[in-house]
Structure formats: C-alpha cells, structure tokens
Length: 622
Ligand SMILES: Cc1cc2nc3c(=O)[nH]c(=O)nc-3n(C[C@H](O)[C@H](O)[C@H](O)COP(=O)(O)OP(=O)(O)OC[C@H]3O[C@@H](n4cnc5c(N)ncnc54)[C@H](O)[C@@H]3O)c2cc1C
Ligand SMILES: *[C@@H]1O[C@H](CO)[C@@H](O)[C@H](O)[C@H]1NC(C)=O
Ligand SMILES: *[C@@H]1O[C@H](CO)[C@@H](O)[C@H](O)[C@H]1NC(C)=O
Ligand SMILES: *[C@@H]1O[C@H](CO)[C@@H](O)[C@H](O)[C@H]1NC(C)=O
Ligand SMILES: *[C@@H]1O[C@H](CO)[C@@H](O)[C@H](O)[C@H]1NC(C)=O
Ligand SMILES: *[C@@H]1O[C@H](CO)[C@@H](O)[C@H](O)[C@H]1NC(C)=O
Image (cartoon, rainbow, N blue to C red; front, side, top):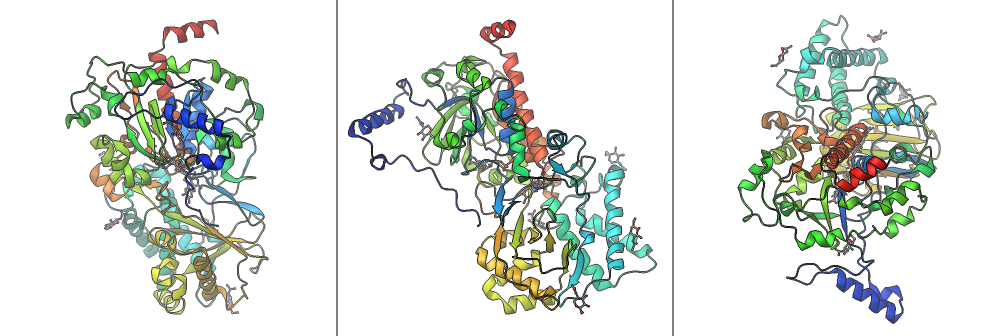
C-alpha cells in the first residue's frame, strides 16, 4: 500500500468523452480560443472559458498552503487558486486507512501546548489525547537471541540523556548556543562526563549499543543523517512549546487539522471554501516572475537583476499595462474542477456567495504583467502574487529548473545549505498480538555481527542495501487496536529502504524481529504492511528541515528562505511559506501553519496599503 506515483490528470481525450459531434466541435472551439496563437498576444476569451488567472496562486496544499488560503478567505480574499501536485491535499500530513484503523504516514504528534497554534485550535475542542512524553524507556531493550538488557542499566543511561536534554531546554543558551561543533560531538562529551561520575556503570557493550540506538531516536526528531551533521548551536534555534510534547488526535489522525483550519469543524456550514480552490494533480514545472517584478519593458534580463531583488532596491519605472494583464482582468469566476467538486461536502455559504460577487481582482492590482506558472500537464496559470510552499527538499532538487529567473543568491544559499532530513515510518499489522500485554515495545541493541548475519542470510530482502541497520525497534501503538507495530527509520537507511518492494521490506522486518525475539515468541507473518516513502516522492524529497554544520558555515537561515520577492512598487510578487521558512518552529505542522498565516498577513497588509477607492467605499458601508 505504498504511495503510487502521482497520476497526472490526462488532458481531455475528446473522442473518449462520447460527446455528440456538435458538442465536440464546441469543445474544440473553446480549446482553440483558450490557447494563444504563437507570436500573438493572448486575446480576450469568450465568456465562460477559464481564464486561469487568480490574484493569488498558492503552490502546495499542505499545512502552510491551506493555512494561507484559509486566512485569506477569512479576510474576504477569495480570488485565489491552490495548485497541488499530488492527487490529495495534506502534503506531509497524510492520514491513511490501515488495518481497520488509520495511521499517519507523516505528522502524527502535536508537540506542546503553549504557543502551539494546532493545540490552540484542537485543545479546547478536546480533539487531542495526552500521552505524556514519548517514553521509549518504557520499552524493553533486547539483544539478538532474546536476552533483555538489565532495566536498571537502561534507566540509568536514559536518565543521563534526560539530564543532558534538560540542559538544552533550561539553560540552552549557556550550554549549547555558542558551541560550534556538531550536536553528536556535544552530546557525547556531555554523556561521557556524566557517565564517568557514576559509581556503578553499565557494561561498556551496552553503553555502546544504547548510544547507537539513541542516535537513531534523536534522528527522528531531527531528521539528519547522523548527529555529527546536526549543528549543535543550530539545534538551539528550535523552540519547544511548553506542555505535553506528544499529544495525538483522538480520532481521524492529523488530517483533522485541515478541518480546523477551514472551520469545517465544528461548524460545517461555516466552512471556508478552500477545497474548492484546490486543483489536484497540478504539478508546477515553471514559475516565471521577471516580468511581474521588473515589468515587461525592462532592458534585457540582467545579471544585476538578482542584486536588485536582494537589496530590495525600489526602482521606479513606467510600467506597461499590457494585454496579458487586460486579459487577466476579465476575471472570470473560478471554475471548480471535478476534483474539487468531488470533495462534495462543501456547502454553499454566505462567504462563497461573497466570493462570486466581490470584484477582488481589482483590488491592489498593479500594472505589471502577472507571474506565469506552468504545469507539467501543460496547464498554464497567471497571478499577481504567487505563494510557494513546496518543501525544502523540492527546492533543493529543482529550484534551478523551477524559477525563471533564478532566485536571489541569498535565498539560494539557504536552499542549498539548510538541512533537509529523511525520516520514514513502517507499520506492521498482525491478526493478533503475540507480545505480552501492556508492553510498549522493543528497542533493539544491534551489533555489527547481527548486521553481517542478516546480510548473509537474507540477501533477497534487500539486506545488501543495509536498510535494516536503520531500524530502531518495534513499538506498539497504544491508540490503535493492539496489533500494529511501528518503527521509524532515518537517514541513509530510510532512503535505501524506499528502493525495495513492500514485500521485501515487510519480510525483512519479520526476519529482523525473528533474530531478536523469535526464540521467545512464535511470530506469525504480518497480515498487513504499509510505509511512507517521502524521499523518492518528487513532491517531497524528504521529511523536514534541520540546521546542519553546513548551515552554520554558509550562514544560511530560515529567514532567508522566507524573504519575499517584491516588485518595484514594493508589493509582494513571489512569497515563500512552509515548515522550513519558520525561524524556530521548523520541522512541525504548527510551524508550517504559522508560516502560511505569516504570508497571508503579508498579502493582506499590502492590500491595505494599496486599497483601491472601491475597497475603501465598501469598507465604509460595513
Ligand atoms: C515522517 C514524518 C513525521 C512527521 N511527524 C511530525 C509530527 O509528529 N508533528 C509535527 O508537528 N510535524 C511532523 N512532521 C512534519 C510536518 O509534517 C511538516 O513540517 C508539515 O506538514 C509541512 O507542511 P508544509 O505545508 O510546509 O509542506 P508540505 O506538507 O510538504 O506541503 C507542500 C505541498 O506542495 C506540494 N508540491 C510539491 N511540489 C510541487 C509542485 N512542483 N507543484 C505543485 N505542488 C507541489 C506537495 O505535494 C505538498 O502537498 C513529520 C513529517 C514527516 C515526513
Ligand atoms: C527470552 O527468553 C529468555 C530465556 O527464557 C529470557 O531470558 C529472556 O528474557 C526472554 N526475552 C524476552 C524478550 O522475553
Ligand atoms: C532515574 O531517574 C529517576 C527520576 O529522576 C529516578 O527515580 C531513578 O532512580 C533513576 N534511575 C536510575 C537507575 O538511576
Ligand atoms: C554566546 O555568544 C553571545 C554572542 O557572541 C554572547 O553574547 C554570549 O554571552 C555567549 N554566551 C556564553 C554562555 O558564552
Ligand atoms: C554529513 O557530514 C559528512 C562529513 O562531515 C559530509 O560529507 C556529508 O555531506 C554530510 N551530509 C549531509 C546530508 O549533510
Ligand atoms: C488552465 O488550467 C488548466 C488546469 O491546470 C489547464 O488544463 C488549461 O490548459 C489551462 N488553460 C490555459 C488557457 O492555460
């Protein structure tokens, strides 16, 4: 049940539509009218044909894009379209059905309460279940062959890690903020110092294997390949919200957050019609922004162009009000796609009625030509403002191809040097529990010999690819029927794992389990298996951002990623939101949502500044 490659919306294959001949002819005429002839400026289209111009285009229907759209609509800005490459909304929030239940292949926990916008929405409605710290110390630590590590020893080691972690949170500043090495180095220094003060020390072999396990565990928070790549002081940029750090959704998983953002929950009749403005299967392949920012009359595409943007130099020049803009001004009502209408449940509301009648597209319109956005399915859209919310992984991989002209140097520096991690989840479903009741799971203490043995015995399960060494254990999801074991896998093994089939990975997990627990339990074959594949999906290319040593060296900051590209009047043209653009809540859903709201507010503010007389008139009448 892994992610299938995103189906592209096929271009309409007219003969298959079984239209009458006259209908076919009409359709062809409409199509011809919509496509500008080469070399000619686009002409006004006949009434009813989609203009594909929106005042605001949002790229990505993940948490950031959705939050931005909802905030704009809440402020009566409805002239927007969301282009989403996947056949679903949600992005790195992906709740799927699995084993008579649901699991989250992406975000699952709400991290903290105070200052966490997700908690602020969901907490009062009692949608969240508290579970306290994700206590992996409650799991049993097991060697291959089934021997359990002494629980006192494990507790002692865990206590050390917690002491160290508390120095992050309490006096983070003094302890780590000025440290120039990696988090791994810092942690090991601290750990060794503390270990040496213990009167009774756990066996060296256990300490060693425990640290191997703990590094993976840390990786799940951080996403980095190894903690020797995570910046020590960079880690202090991340701010934890106070309160319960690991709440889960009582029902329906993390996707519930989208109903909260659009106010569909708890009042379906007050839903903001974001879903109607989302075009699924719409992968953006190019964002052409030069004309929008510099005007179509600029003298050549210059090398100095990038400097100009970066320094936010405002050159005033006469802008040509050209025909592209006029065409756009026709402002046809947005036509919902089949995808959007299929979502169904959206009901007509007062806000939607407002959407249809309000001449939003006349507000704050500049004379510049629009930004042109091309889709890989051949579609073409234009807008005054484009808000880009694709992941840092996507930007790393394709910013060069995506943006024409290239993004300003400082932003590209951030794209290249902020870290973007790899985390995947695996879920195994058993027809009945074979483990003792009340257990929270097994953490595995892996040795080099274990890996060698596995490689030797099971080459058919991709063991040559070494993905098994990324497994940290098997954890029982207490909130699901007690039959699902899950694991996280991080870094290189997470990438390698994606290359093998579900069957190979499931069997590999089963054999790995057998190596550790097969002597004690007769473990049946799982009856179900699913996993995420965030790395190989071209619309994500990984899990979430972090601060690496490269980020420090290159002086790369989230704030650089967030910087807007303004036009010559100082109005927003190309904006950036998403998890990785957040200064201190990066790598979370609450960070992504705040970033979407931030950019929506930027748009709303600029609208206020450039309010047309018509808008002022309307405001007075309220
Ligand atoms: C395994 C995993 C576990 C996680 N666990 C947690 C957790 O427990 N708690 C937590 O708070 N956070 C967690 N996160 C992080 C959280 O999921 C993300 O920070 C957040 O969802 C990111 O939202 P976003 O809107 O910034 O980006 P995204 O969700 O990635 O949204 C961007 C959207 O853009 C689309 N897109 C990409 N390229 C294109 C293109 N060319 N054209 C059009 N559309 C495009 C994508 O399909 C996507 O829908 C987890 C993430 C992962 C991967
Ligand atoms: C497996 O059985 C052995 C021998 O009885 C025992 O020492 C060990 O603790 C058991 N391990 C687990 C994980 O139950
Ligand atoms: C670990 O810490 C807890 C609480 O701080 C304490 O009660 C316990 O005795 C410690 N365990 C060991 C083995 O040091
Ligand atoms: C860390 O560096 C900052 C800025 O250089 C300085 O103000 C601060 O005092 C330093 N903190 C410690 C604990 O050295
Ligand atoms: C991790 O660090 C190593 C060595 O310092 C480096 O070669 C590698 O590129 C880094 N990887 C990432 C993803 O930063
Ligand atoms: C408008 O967008 C749709 C969907 O993205 C696309 O199929 C169509 O070709 C576009 N029309 C124009 C005139 O660009």
